[in-house]
Structure formats: structure tokens, C-alpha cells
Length: 483
Image 1 (tube, helix red, strand yellow):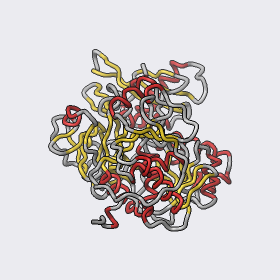
Image 2 (cartoon, rainbow, N blue to C red; image 1 turned 45 degrees about the vertical axis):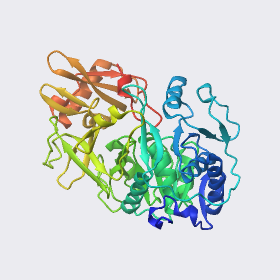
Image 3 (cartoon, rainbow, N blue to C red; image 1 turned 120 degrees about the vertical axis):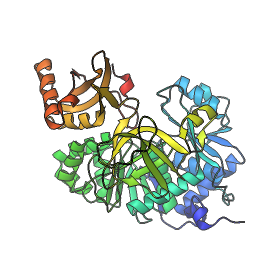
Image 4 (cartoon, one colour; image 1 turned 180 degrees about the vertical axis):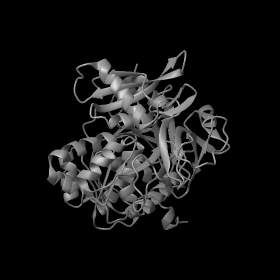
């Protein structure tokens, strides 16, 4: 029996219209061409249960993922810059039966035993029948900050339901053209940035590599939406300061969306001042895809990630696991999530899966406050961004935003350091806009700045000036690498 239209993951490939679907640089495929190329990959995949995709930012990666999903396989997107040890772990854990890559790929030792198919965009016949919606669609490996990376198993149902919720919240339609330069081995760039437009029948233009000029050129043309991470928006604001025409082009966008890390309030205000556009923030993770976000028609408040998306339930709990009922924008609690957007578990890790849930709610490890209107404000990670100092529970993000308002501070990360008197002392790692003449004096000035804007107990007890902050591919600061 044929599935209902709404149950199909990519109805646009089964009934393709003659319009551009995906573009990478100067290479593009229309929907009929994309459907035919995906069918060709699906024929090669056959009945394989798991397929690894070497996820370079190329047209072939998009076709490989869509073709493997059409065949009903679970796709394991692999970071092309992955290290040898991590790749060996991913290969051993997921046991892919086939490896898909763009032509000219040199297979690494860890994948040498896996049959390789170089995706050549050759057309196939009919797409296979629609797989069951509970079948695994993607196995996305976490960053492995607390041990070897874990494989997050996302079913087709989660992708379908979440993309439809985003479309509703952001008024995202087939008429939209999305531009981005996000990597295709993460949820952000792959599910939202590539599978999203294809599900909706729109168009995606992938830049390959981010540049403000390329973004502006797209938004001055057909593009209507931009997805990015804070480092991209920081560069965009810097360039818009110098180039009014670039700023005007960005101002033409229907929607600017930022995610993967918090966008500092100062960047929100710069972009608003320069372009007339306010950036929409959203909150998600590999295990849940997207949980909450600011609606296209909603209040785009800096520092807030809006309300839960349709089909997603969110609650805050205290350290004892009790529900936090107040919405005072002050009380901090861990975010728990349930809904059709959730993963089914960690591959081969029933212990980790069980530990991640509490009475059917996924424990995100992220902490937040809730405003009276329900808007969530992410404070940070429970493990690294909550500092317990002098009897207070302090969010690192609030201090970071305050420090970024000072002209001396270009970038900053705030961490807690063990202290025999306070429990933890607040430590600020600052990338200065210029080398301070007197580091100690400037450090005291920054501490006083925070005490004046926030409260004295939130001031940094120590400021360390550094040349750069360690970041991952998505621009998130890796705080555990500091110190």
C-alpha cells in the first residue's frame, strides 16, 4: 500500500517539478535531475542497512544522502576532516556496508574494507517504495567530549515532523531559496540546510565556503533565507560595517537564522543596526534536531530561543529533578524534551540511552531560564556553563554577553575554576581587540564592568588574555580545552 503524501519524506522527488532544487557553486540539479540521480544511488545502495557518506560540501554529498535515504538505508555522514582514531571508532561502531563519496576520493585506512561507490550523478529508474517512518534515517556522531563519539540514531519520522514544524514556524515554503555554507555532517547543514529545502520543494544554494561577499550576492539575487552560526554572523557584521552595499543586500533577506551556539547580544544589535534585520535564534541538538525557536512573526529578542516547536514538549527541572513551574526569567533549570523529534537511542549503547532519559523525557544537559511569555533563554551546558560560586548558581553566558559589550573584548569564554573558599571562581578568557598596555589593570576594569552591569558576585575573579579561543567546526568554543 502506498504511504499518504504527508508521510513521504521527500514527496518532491516522487513528483518532481521543473525547477532548481540544489546548487553547489556553479553546479546545480533541477528536481527531475535530482530525483533521477538519487534513484541511481538508491539502486547502487540496494538493500544495504547502513551507508557511510564522506560528507564534503559538494553536490555529490546531497545526492548520496538523498539516494541512500530513498533506498531505506541509515546514512552515517562522516566529517572529511575526522582524525584517524575517531574515524576508526565510527567505522567499527556503525559497520557501514557501503561508502559513498564524490569522484576522486582517496579511501582512508579505517574504511579500506568498506566497498566504495563514487557518486557520478548517473540517472536511475524509479525510486524504491517509501520506507517505514520509524526506520533509522541518519546516524550522526556526537563530538565525543566525554568519551568516544556516540552514534545518534534519528528515525525518518523525526526528520519529517521536525522539518514541517520549522516550515510552519518560519513560514518556510517552496518559494524560498536558502543560502548557507554549513558543513554537511551536522544536523544544521544537512537536515535543516539541505533536506529541509528538498522536502518543502524549495531551493538550496550552498556556497562551499562562507564569505560575506558570496552571501550578499545571493541575497541580492534569488536567495530569501540565510542559515549560519555566530562566527559567520560576526564576520558578516564586520564586513557590513565597511560596505554599505553588502549591508543593504543582507537587509533584503526574508529571514536570517542563527544556531549551533548562542549569538551574542552585541552581534544581534550590530546586524540590526547595519541591515535592518533581526536574527532569529533556535535551539537544537543532534539527539532532538530542533526543540525551540523564535517564529518569523515573533519577538526576535537577543539571547532567547523562543518557544517549543509544534510537536515538541519542553520542561525545566531543578537539580533534584523536580519540575520548575515559575517563569521568572531568573530560575535556572535543566531542559528536558519529549516529542516526535527525538532520536531512538545511541547506537550500540543501551546504557547511555537509558541514562539520557528520565520517565520518557530526554535530558539535554543544557540549562535555561523561562520568561513570563514562555521564551527560553539558554544559559549553557550544565557541565561547563553553570558556575557555582559563593552559594550562587551563575550562568557563564550572561557574563560573556556583558563582557562583549566592553570595547576591549573581541571574543570571550567564561569558565569556573575550583576555589577552596568560593567553591568555584569565575574565570574569563578574553581575546582582546588590541594588546592591553597593562593586563592587570584592564582585567580589573573588565571585572568592574561586569559588576556594574550585572551584580558584584558575577564579576570575573581572574581575566586571562589569549590570542584565540578553541572552537569546533560549528564555531562553538570548546571550554574543556581551556586551562
